[in-house]
Image 1 (cartoon, rainbow, N blue to C red):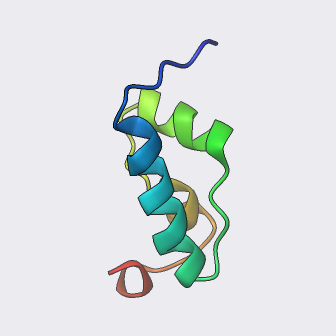
Image 2: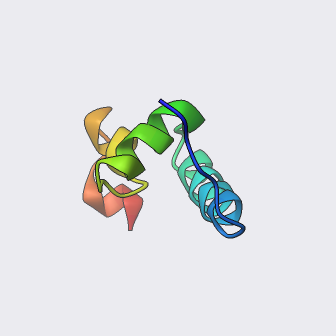
Image 3: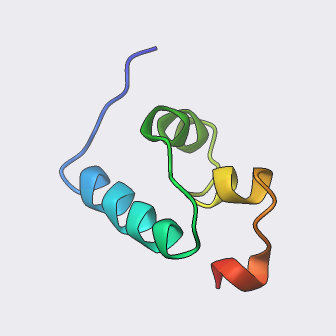
Length: 57
């Protein structure tokens, strides 16, 4: 599957990556692209890994 990055998509990923890093989670870029293609938000991986909504807020 080919992924398309818009000019802002890189920065959206980086901001999510940094925010999740503060919660102790490393965001995987390839999975992030798959999640976004399915319409999932950038927190999908963290929620799947068991990080709760309170930690993510």
